[in-house]
Image (cartoon, rainbow, N blue to C red):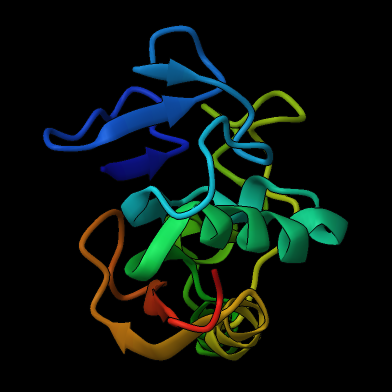
Length: 162
């Protein structure tokens, strides 16, 4: 089983699409998944982690890792604060590159669930993924949204984390 957490309206074929909205395959809060331990081959969260309250992020990553099988992959894509700050330093004024990654797009991010709670760096997220029991964490080119602004980290659940 492959989980697409926080899918919103973007359902992916071959995944169980999970979101708080009733239109998802499984409607639930992604901070407490309804599956037992070790059932998923992949957990993917595309532009979701920045919506989680900062104080919950470490526990949420552990929850997502909990449902992964040993050897299963966790894929996270989201804005990268280091890249955003480089754009700001360089005087870029495109809101998609310098404002929306920090707070969300005001045209679509209007509720407390929608707004961005934090903008993380790749190193911070990788450390939290390691703390959640993931290994072999690599940075890849983002597949969704804006690659020059975002990060994509992929980690594998270690065999010793059941």
